[in-house]
Amino acid sequence: MKIWIATGGTGGHVFPAMAVASELASRGHKITISCDGRTDKMVRDSAPHGARIAHVWASGVGAKSKMKQIYALFKIGISAFGLILRFVFSRPSRVVAFGGYASVPVVFAAHVWGIPTFLHEQNAAIGRANKFAMRWVKTLMTSFPTVNGMPKTKTNIVYTGLPVRADFLTAAGTKIPNKSHLLVTGGSLGAQILDEIVPLAVANMKNKKIFVTHQTRPENVEKLQRFYAEHKIHANVLSFIRDMAGAIVDADLVIGRSGASTVIELETIGRPAILVPLNINPDQAANAAAFAKLGGGFAIEQSKFTVKWLENTLTELFENPTRLEKMAQKSLVENNAAKNIADTVTK
Picture 1 (spheres, rainbow, N blue to C red):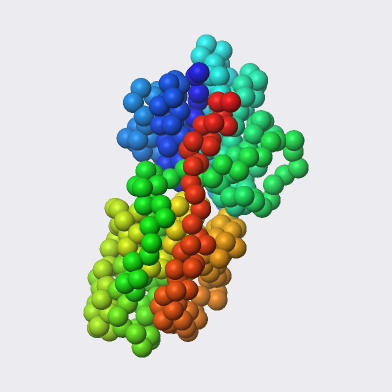
Picture 2 (cartoon, rainbow, N blue to C red):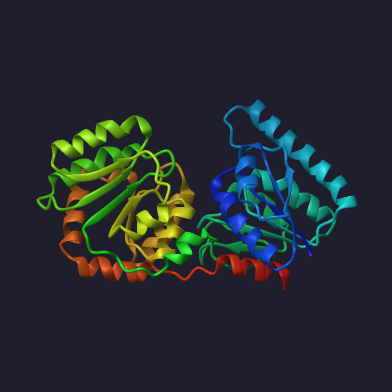
């Protein structure tokens, strides 16, 4: 079977798509992967052997400038027209789209030719591009059991989960180490609110036995290292964590943002967390709420994430390791997402 996989413009779209591409390729299907210029290298570096790579001319429509919005729509329209012509000569049996505006022209071209199309929503609140594209798809696959903001359509909804990298699957279900180890991560760009609140909260705690691994922006590394050292707090401050699965396994508690990949990675390994959604992102708020509903941790608004609140919360948790263990157990969710998606697409 010839299967076309369409990714979006960020790693959050690409990594799940590559996991599914590898699963489908291992089953003997012929894979073509489309992406835009932002993720071209990422896709080429992680695509399964033998997969074809196609370029889509697209960018986000969320720009404030009206002219930029019009230009973005123009690019999507041109790409859709080009793909409609391409599918005349090389028509896939299935199309699987992983969201983002780069997947919209692929979904539309597949709709024109009546190709069965499957769309994946990574967040617990449906994104704008997916909401727009849903009118043309047969099945929407979701990362979370419930997704907010769903339009009223006849689209079939299937809960599959979100694929993660193999190292997270290998670490699934590992017990927390009970070493008073706190992991702080704001994602690839860091998070200023975490840099401002977490060190002060830890410094105010009576228990200074906590070891902190703190990922931050490169320009903040030296300042945070100096602060932790001055307050006699054992800490490892980094601008990038290459082995994120290993860092989560080594932690008793995680503090971070709540992008879909972060939340699902925590659920896959099984770690309690304090999640602080980006205050302008409703997707992150929905993801954090879904995690908190499991009983695996806290979802707290950025405005309420204060030094005093965090000091009290960390003190209570690290003085009650049994509670951390129970939270870890509740956060654990079995992840068979790549297999589930491949099964859904090919049956």
